Length: 90
Image (cartoon, rainbow, N blue to C red):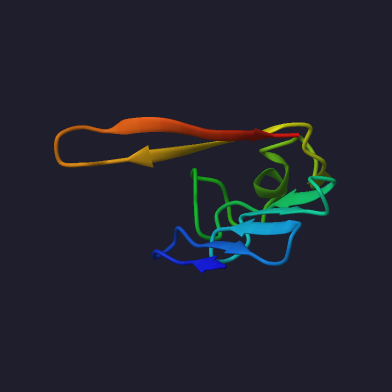
């Protein structure tokens, strides 16, 4: 499955790998055990692209694992926004 909407690209490759951002801003793989981030590729917060803070901002280190992941969906209809919790993964 591949969902693309400009820079909001999400790629699901196989059963245990997902990548956020068209240039792998956040990669989650191998049942949340092998993860990395490299911000400022597609999504930004004012850091220098390619810098150490870009790779360490989310977890304090370049490679990390995730204990729990919550997924939310935000809908922006014309009459107001809604936030729906889609699941918790461990």
